[in-house]
Image 1 (cartoon, rainbow, N blue to C red):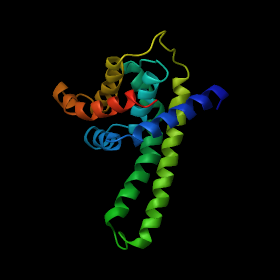
Image 2: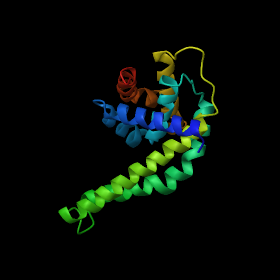
Image 3: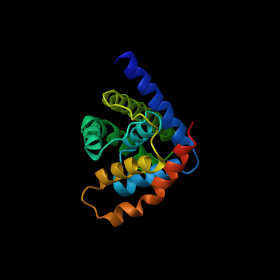
Image 4: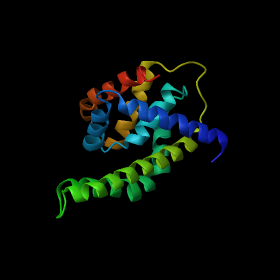
Length: 178
């Protein structure tokens, strides 16, 4: 990883943590993940690109970002998440105090895997050119919608519209993320 890539990765990760910690954002991200299959880290990096780096990503860019991290998400992050989620309710001896420590370790591993995905996406983002002006709120919203649309696939506009409340929550928090 080059010095500039490390800088972008560190900035992107800090942005993601700051944004995710804002009121309502984690619930909005989890809704998009559960209802639309959105890769939350990809959404947060795309938001970082627009808000902090003045990079407006196209639908094609989002597809390229997804291609860059899909194998990692599918083979590492999702299995860790599924295992962590399974430990909430079973099989025996879960859930229990004894299995909660294991669940916490898996959650830490999942977070570490997401950070590596962030680094991977930051490396991809390094090639993009910033606009000569700040992105507008509408442009940031369009990028977020494009990410959701990408994961929904051929879903109709109504399905994307049902996700707008979650997008608005994240967008409002991104406005205040500095």
